[in-house]
Image 1 (cartoon, rainbow, N blue to C red):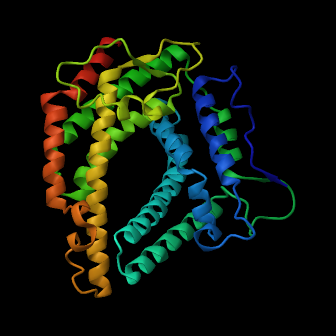
Image 2: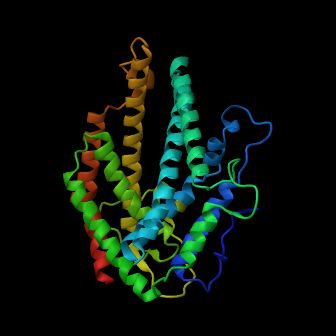
Image 3: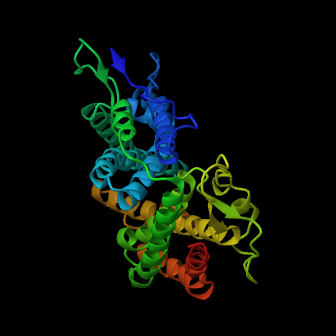
Length: 354
């Protein structure tokens, strides 16, 4: 008998808020993990890893990773949350590869890249899909043929839920105090990193800065109402570039409202949060273009395609090398972080609530 459900009701208001948040995301992961390959599926839809990617498994894993990072740094059960973080991070990282090669294959068709490159992208997407399933089976996230046929078999969602259920969770008041300290440290360390990262380094520069900024946003969403937007906060002058309809009306930027119980929520000034989202999106566009350019150039060169080392021939205006991306990212960062003091404003708002 396979037991994949949680040992508690994640919607119960009687649960500690921290456990309820983990439970909600674990249950979303459980639903995604239950997605099966259709019996008549062909092509990528015949790959379980791709099917789980299409089922949006990555989103609850991101949220679980965020919650685990927070709990690792704010609770007395550091080792427990390190273990959960490891499990979800490896799966999420491989899902990132599934996504990258699937998207690049689609872009490659638009750019009319040679069939040799498209086949390479399909092969790498298939390999990433296989790696994902291999990890999920190895850690018993999903049912598979190597599980014992007799007795109860508890899958990973149930095991994690049972372990978390046995922990001592802080009171709402103590949790709020710890979360404020966590966010202040997170914002301040990101501010320091932004001043020292080499943005000409694609992976350890632009991507690292964007990751750090993005985690602040993910943490705020994952906390399910413990962080909310202060929409009464007025934007500074000349901030119209950040407050576009695409940013302000993005559902991801409308943080969960919570149930109104427990401690007062931590407030992020809405204009600052929108500016953060704008910067994350802009850096993401630069990162994607530079990664696509690098992957196309390297792939075509490895395949021996004539002219492969000149990706602009194929990508047109989308092409962007690491140096160009670094220069553009530097300009964006200086404007948002140094001149408009985005992170400093957020740090000050958090300090005022301590």
